[in-house]
Structures are given as C-alpha cells and as structure tokens.
Amino acid sequence: MAGIRDIAEKCGVSEAAVSRILNCDPSLSVTMAVRRSVEAEAARIGYKTPRQRKAHPLQVSLVLAPVDKPGFEERLLEYLQPIAAEAGIALSLSAGGKCTDALIALGEFTAEEISYFKNIAKELLFINNLGLEYSYDSIMIDYSNAEKQVLDYFLSKGIRNIGYVGGVFHRTASVIGVRRMEEFRKLLSDNSLFNEKWFSIGQMSSESGYRMVMDMATLPDGIFISDPDTAEGVFRALEERGVAVETVTYNNFFPSAVSHGTELRIFTLDVWRTAFRLLTEKVKGEREQSFRVFCPACLY
Image 1 (spheres, rainbow, N blue to C red):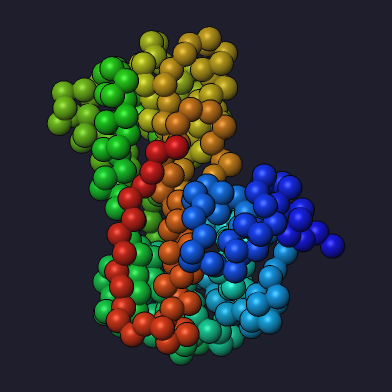
Image 2 (image 1 turned 45 degrees about the vertical axis):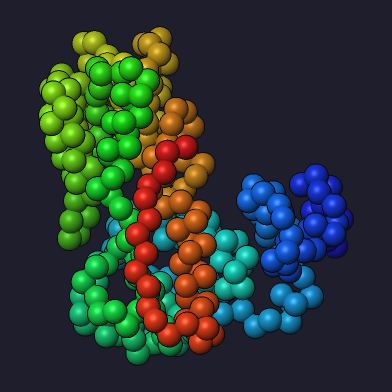
C-alpha cells in the first residue's frame, strides 16, 4: 500500500518532512506550496497517518440552493471530498431528514429551510447568505471586487479595448450571470471604456460563446468571459479567426474548467479549507464565538 515514502518521492521532500506535515507539526518550516503538494498527494493516494486513522471523521452534509444544472451537485461533491478528507471530514450531499454533525448551506435559503437545517445538524455554516443571526459561522465571497480585478488586470497590460462575452442561465427562481454582466458594464462605462460592439450576451454554452465571437466585425484586445462553458466556444472562435486576444474567464468552482488565458476564481481552495476548519472548531467546541469571513476572488 502506498505510504509516506511514495509521497516523499512524488513531492521531492524527505519522509520525515512528509510525516511532520501530515501530523500538523507547528515547528516545521516549509513553504505553503510544499505543504499543499504533500497534503494533495496524500489525499490522492488515500494515505492517512495513524492518528488520522484512529480519528472519527466528522459527518458533514452539503446542501445547495437550486442550480438546475443536471449533475452539478455530484460534480461539486466529487471535487470537494478529497479536500474535506484532509480536514478529517466525511462530506456527502444532504439527505432529507438524516442527522449529521454539521451542514454547509451554499446560497440563499428561506427561514423555513434554515429552521429545518437546525433540526438535522448540530452545527451550521452558511456560504453567501448575509441575512442570518450571528449564531453560526458564515463565509461571504466579495463579488463587488471581482470584476474590478479583471478591469485592473487588463489596464495593467495597457489594454483599453475591452469586450465582454457572456452567457446567462435561467433557473427556477433566478437568472445566473446577470449581476456579473451588469457590474462589468458599469465598470467599463465609469471608466469611459464601454463599447457596445464588443459587449455580447448569449447563453451559457460553448456554441453561444463561439457564435458571439465569430459575429464580431472586429475584436477587442481583451475579453472578459462570463463562464467556462462559454469560454470553450470563445477559445475555438479565436483560434479559427487567428487573432491573439487577452482573456479572463469567470470561474466559480472547478480549477480545471478553464483551458486558456487567465482565470478569475471565485471559490478558491482556501475558501473550502476555511469552511471545513471553521466547522471543525465549532463542532469540537474549540470556539464559541461565530465568525463571518469575507473572501476575495483571485486571478490565476
């Protein structure tokens, strides 16, 4: 069975360093990149230290406000489970009525839904929900700064001919993509950079992204793309047109979803690690006071 030696060889560090990292030795001085590399490799091969094997993992459920995209919840769970396992958490999708140690609620929920969550979980953590009492931890993504980072990025490269290729997705109770489009339009307008001919709105799909770029008579020097699905089509169209354009793609969740250009990651790995750490502290009684954490989006 794969173990410490395999992790050490894969990550280029000593076996002693691997052991100290996985056992959370506070006296060990290594870079965050090395630490994350070791933790990720351990999670990939399923290695646990003796202490981790003895520990009973916290049972945490994940519930999302309706997204209406088939398979999305399962895909997010698959991505998050190894990260949760690093924190000693067994993560699963919420099963109605099943009691659990803690529950993560992502999105907006009604008072009745929140009351129900309280009945099935010992501890709650809310993500992107400000209308709450202070009894529980919450994490808020600083969306207001996200689009500004994109504009600043383009301007830092001397790019002032800036476009937007965006999709919207209609779900049961809301429309995804409108806020990011309106915010970026306002930013461009406030800086006298808005040009209607480079501002295209379609659907959140590869075909829509492709068609919007192909239909532009001329192309800007920089394009902000609303989502990874639309980006697939944008990249294909740019390749066919043979034009080099600087791109930034808005990406909510999955690190591998953007294949070209720069990515505006909304939910970074550290957001999830923070969520799991906060929950663990509250469930284990290590902290009584609830925290409200604001996290910025990051460019990659």
